[in-house]
Length: 433
Image 1 (tube, rainbow, N blue to C red):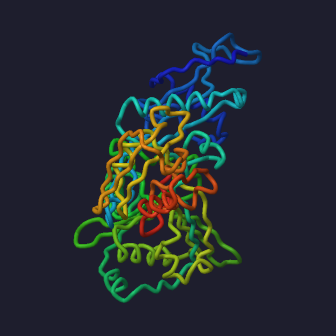
Image 2: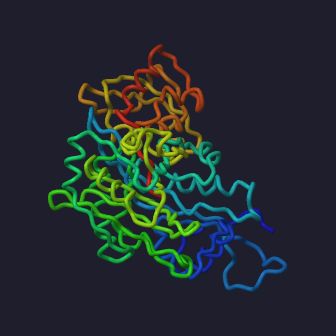
Image 3: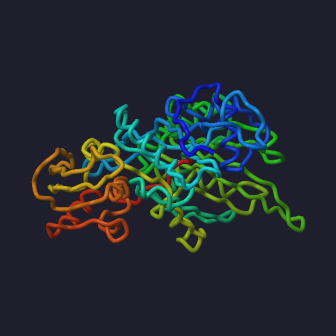
């Protein structure tokens, strides 16, 4: 077996090879899915793969083309991060996905080849300065310069849970209009995307789907779904415009003639607190159900406290969005800051050498930054992953130094930069991609 697979671009002709590798890596075969269905899930403009070289191996069926042994792709996405002072802003990110290595080719440096190729291509295209991903295993991507920037907080509420919100919020929630449609219709997906973008504008940590894939993001495979219902979309309107949504699926269950159905809410987003309250009120009121699970929430989520606090919602937290600065000066100037700051950073980045070196980050009193190369003595030496972890505004830079490393040369530099990058609240977990 050769140890030197060939790196190639991918075309629609490769869908059968891609599906074969995907099924082998993840062993989560979707009943009823065909190779052509990958057209709706895979952005070939960003996709690259490693193709095995050499002769067929014993036991393999003859094929026209050799099998793939590694792959990655990405989506054109955006993430909501701190803007200047008390605002939010959305910056483009390259959402890495579909990363996989064939079980026969692990521990041979192939993942490093793919990650390096991905990051260098992101830099060369210059379409965004930040890359992001969800990690299948938390120990993998830190060594490639990614830092975990947000948590995925799961909340579980019982049916009929009492939600106690401030009177003004509760009164405004009474005026929110709600209705439910079935996904994935063209009209339903279009409405979801409209509400998705409206909510992301006011939600720290929100990651948005690419416009080009908004109508095809979710597919319904009847064989895979089995006896479960189709996915439902609960839409919220205030003053005639969509302000929030919940993508959900209920599952019927009975115990001793008592309904014990569950509601799984894979996405819940709202542009304001009254919309959020109205949506959750409806979610905990479905007939024939006993509990509701909300994914991708925040430790600062009002829902948790409206319901009585962490013990009332069975809080669980997981790592969510991992961010990686691909172009340090551009990335640091695209976001905003909470306070003035002037520090010289020495960035360590072995995988993206153009990032390595000294950068002077100067933030004015309005929270806007400039970042330029400098020969000045550094105030702080940081691995690039540390900047990724703090970039979303939630996990403070100061709290990450003990775990990710960093050396303070000028007393107070860590605190100064940490406070400038910090947001007022914790970010929300990102949508799956």
